[in-house]
Length: 140
Image (tube, rainbow, N blue to C red; front, side, top):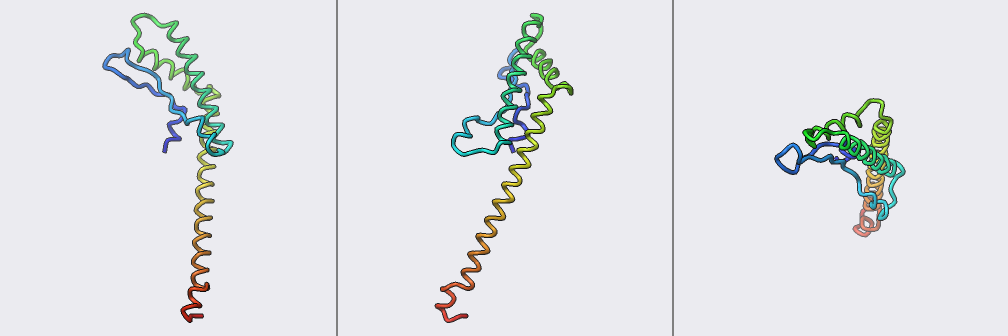
């Protein structure tokens, strides 16, 4: 499942040096809502993830401006993520809560869909058992 990774900054490298690093923040496609109406819980995760991206970007700009020439992008990125993961960061907690609410909503929707499918199957079996096909064969 992708949800646990959404909004969670991580450091990736695209080369072999310590300066070939960047921070990746996985996100849902915000345009997904255009094609099918999404739950409010989904929109909250999208919003909090964008807020996280802006916050991390702000931390990165500040850290880059204050960095020493000998500091690598990996070192700077690690310090930015440490600042973001500060236990007092309210946005971090809001994102965790939004993701938990979305996970719960998706689970409810899955159970509702499965129950609906079972009801349809039960109705189809009931029609078959009592329906015109059985009567036509002379079975009552």
